[in-house]
Length: 493
Ligand code: FAD
Image 1 (cartoon, rainbow, N blue to C red):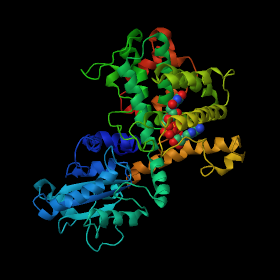
Image 2 (image 1 turned 135 degrees about the vertical axis):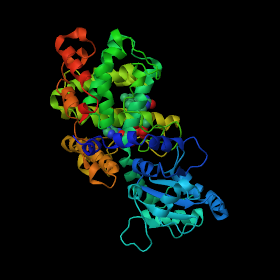
Image 3 (image 1 turned 90 degrees about the vertical axis):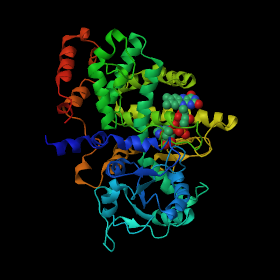
Image 4 (image 1 turned 135 degrees about the horizontal axis):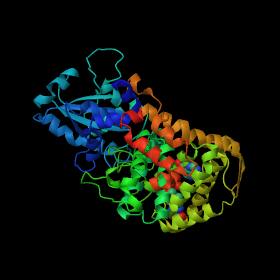
């Protein structure tokens, strides 16, 4: 397989790892005072290629230029709305700047025919990658921002482009809401990746694999992720943990350190090293302590449920129940959820039943929290709990409803969930990773071949646990040795 195909196949994973600094740079804006991301010749393409934002603004300036210095607070005021962990509208516009006074950036500034400072450009981030811009060149998707002299004017210009009503005081207006919901949903895959990485980190920090029972539960969940996580890089990371589990956790005694070049769980990041952290977008609350991880975990669970086959449904159910019970460090959540798991008396035979079970279980939690949050005032005022999906999202899901009860059309609910958490979610992700080139149109859903199909096949079988140790059986041992002997790249193409 050619390098181009490899790039195609790994999509974002390869993109990120071949440009090690790019995600880091996006993450680093969390720690710096300026919110606009400083770009230069070496990181320009990779950052703009990797950003999950839908649009980008690039400011070309010169550090010696007094007008640019005066303009900076205006530009930063707008950047603050869109960039960084405290952004009110994250994931929509990436605000960046390039210092043309630095010799290393001369060629980059020339490529965009920068004629004055500051000069601002607008466009989809990927359109800037390896791009040039010339005045009067028709049909370019890169536009010069011709009216951005103050923060207000710049924001007005942006609002006109994307038909939004963002305001500098951070208030959302009506017609913007629809757009932001849409954009936020686009980002849900990144949140699922982040929640997966966070769940794994919590296990490491808590050293939570303490017994043969927790070890088996961990393996089952990781196997479910390896086969059915919607993100390819998480499937890959999970499979690598499975294959190496014997060395990472000999006799169930795991080593958790994150460094030292040793074979430790900590050295096997479940979704790779470049997964965004601290950036929940679809799951971002309007307050610091709301939503985020637990929201991401629900989306992960729904997205897994719609991907399993009939024959795997009870395995998936057990894997999720045990995972929550053993590793979700919220006691109240764990206990309630466990009760709902225990109330299932007959094993699932149909994936449809399992999908609807996760959905209705989530709604039971929503129903309880609706009351609790109303009386305690602990909810997120911008995201009150609702019985889901609301009619606006799925009118056909409702047979009838009144204030006291809803009669669902379960066939429509099932179809809606399959689409919402299945193909639709990943196709949006695919679009996000399509970086303007044919190369990246490989569906993100495409199953990994060799290694993953080896994992998919036995998902409902005892092999899941057998993988944990060669002592469990010759077949498992043989399979595991085969996986370990594969060269890393070959096994994923
Ligand atoms: P969430 O409820 O987290 O939902 C995330 C997203 O999923 C929503 O934005 C919506 O788009 C979608 N969604 C909502 N309902 C459904 C549904 N029925 N089916 C499919 N998609 C849906 N908190 C407590 O205070 N007490 C508890 O006992 C508790 N138990 C929990 C058990 C589990 C297993 C988990 C993962 C979380 C639990 N939580 C509990 C946290 C709580 O459920 C919410 O995750 C948290 O309050 C954040 O809410 P949210 O507004 O982000 O929406």
